[in-house]
Length: 483
Image 1: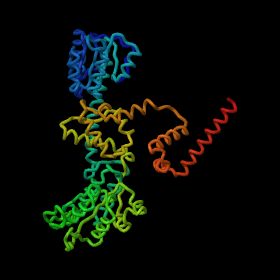
Image 2: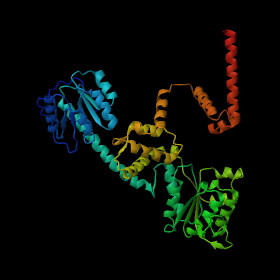
Image 3: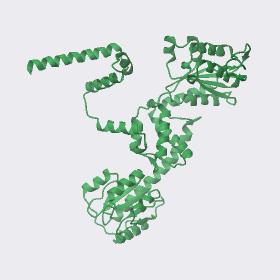
Image 4: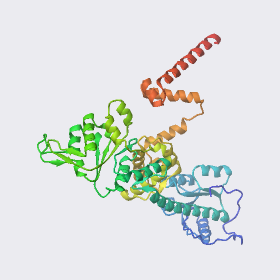
């Protein structure tokens, strides 16, 4: 489809060879033909109609640009009055990167054909057009279009099959999470979810609750990092009227409200030691006491906690109670960051596009290849939540059927340009030196912090700087001796 035609001299009025069949294609395709020569426009339209397709001929470039949503392939004469064929190609691909554009010109050279392909054309044909080659090209475009349609249908079915209670993933790490959730949900025990921010810990908590024996009861969610201790205590345990300023009425806490169900405490590592002691009492004795009330109330709830920190390290640092950690850590589920499950990105993108299309009334089918490359190269510090935000904003700004590079946030585009423009082959030692230098600049020359980011010991970093100083001193002496 995308190979240039070489040495063709067939004319439009030539009768096709008897060996060539122009049977009607069973794959729907509506080619648009843009040419300012009425005779050639008519002949080309007749030839394409004989192939079984339904062409739309026009001599108006603006009309052709409006038709690209309907026509998946456009045949364009290179030399048009008022609008060059290459300019039309650029405008058409900006509007729809998935469009197939075939350029036609009387002056054919291999160089011009390759240049057209580099600019994004599907093919470059000399005039008069060889109808045999044209039919082959259109058949290939139609086949690819049909293949994409069938792949999209299969992807939608795959998305349904791989969705696990609102969570999407096919990577080994996520399949292991799903398997552990199925096993844990059967038993009434405390669960600790560990993973970076934005990995979907709350979705995992909801999945555990939904398939558990108490799935028909309430699931309540509390983010411990958003409330100070006094408000958090009132939120979790409730309070009596008049127990503090502003307590104008008695209120039950989340533990009482969720009695018989599940309580999910997000970012539990942000709670104070005093609050941790009260939470330990709830877990051990299954009882709560409202603020300002002497009465102790019995409850029966399942507790799921989540954190983005290493709780064992927090225990060693004295920031988290060891007894509470052991109570929560009876079952631990680690949710991998997005950078460790890149194979899930296509599924996640499809899931987010489906939601955005419904929410914004759009009809975005997918992501172009160059935009996909950017998504796979990004490190995703914000994990799945960041990817969802990127796809949401790109879907809003997209003007074609596919999200292209220009629809992605500016910082992703700039990073791609820098990665492509600034790259040059270097020695491995020089790459390490450059990376250490950049990390040191980021840490304001704090060597301890830089060593932690680099994942090496502080002594290893010191040895690196000492070796570099010796090399620099040796080089200075050599220059002085032989300069």
